[in-house]
Image 1 (cartoon, rainbow, N blue to C red):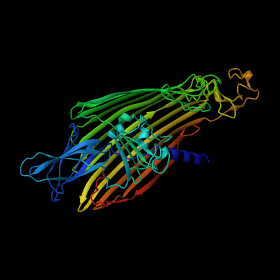
Image 2 (tube, one colour):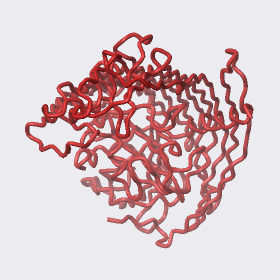
Image 3 (cartoon, one colour):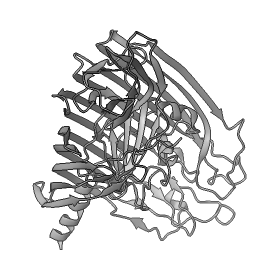
Image 4 (cartoon, rainbow, N blue to C red):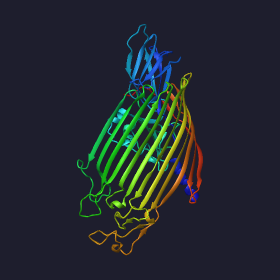
Length: 576
């Protein structure tokens, strides 16, 4: 029986930390043709941000095709030119992380120098080369949508999903959460390990349903947060927000145990720009939030409706991101950040004295680095890695040798003297991957091939102990029945005093999750086939009662993928 319990526990822990390959940069691929639809060879193609950042340049081949990559997510201008043809500029080309935007550019022949033709990239196009369902919110949409300050609410604004349920109704444990294309899942509980500031987000991608072999170990969907980068333009902002119960009405009734927001004060700021123009850029962001939550007073009947003490939380979020553009073929990114929540009177419901609540301290630090390099005319190599380490401590106000008092009664218990438990949690997550992407054409058939491998390990320590080794459970009667009840004086308690024991947790685990994959998108005319295969292996270890780390699970599996897309329009028409 114990062997089965170990196996089930480790299977859940291993699957709670999925890996998936997702680039933090994107590219632009297209074909240049003349007015008679013949491909034009030797056209110089330049892609650049409107402020001159991240310049990329290439030349079209005999088929008129071109590919530029290592582009941070954002908006670009694409210029094509050659002697004998009128220069053409395409503005507003949106590049998404991990995506290759396709363009079809028609140029006009001319014998004399004329003003360039300027066109705007149109609408939202369906990605013909992939059967997966995907929604992307860019910075412009994020600033305009009614998202507030909660990054999870952004997910709820994408079609077909809720904040924690992505296509299929599964819970957060079934989703894969990423930060800059790198897995950022909680190794013990599932869900997102890092809670980003909404202002950090350059793009938010929600995908699933038909994802290729580079994505694995999820049943719901993939949420990828791409953070902002600097550019040649110096910009920034400072924002503050205030909220108070004096301006808001209260929805609490006398019988409710759920606290409500009493006040919230926030200040945040960011700045980004160049350290070395065209080469080295930075992004810095900081956020401070102080919030108070108040609860109905259930201890002192006849007094004020609200308890005199409130739950106070200080939240901190900070991010530093550096982007190095040494050549037109390379892009390096490095980030360091932290989030933290520090709470007094944690868990306040109005049915306990302040000393029976907890102090909570929950900092999280994370680091990531990525490098993308163009290989040859139509290939990219990307290496990336990340490390995340946090803790969530919920400690009592009194010594852990002092037992709590939780009344024994039909309705919700009242708590005195000390918190019932001390709860300490320690998650870590380390991930690395190497991915090669290539585009090739063989006659009328186009290939978009992705080959890669990834490896990740996470640890999860959770220790919960009952303060004092037990909890007093004296019977409680309303003051109108027993006016003598005093939690500090056992002589006023009912002579029959129950006690509570157990409920303690001591988990120390280590899980490893690795995979290798091959995915090819084969396009022939209007038809695209997406064959792929993913080979994964998993291992989990757990500390036993003797203090030894034992292997509780080791397994492997092959996950084949196949899909197809039929382009009924024949040209991948945009939808405006």
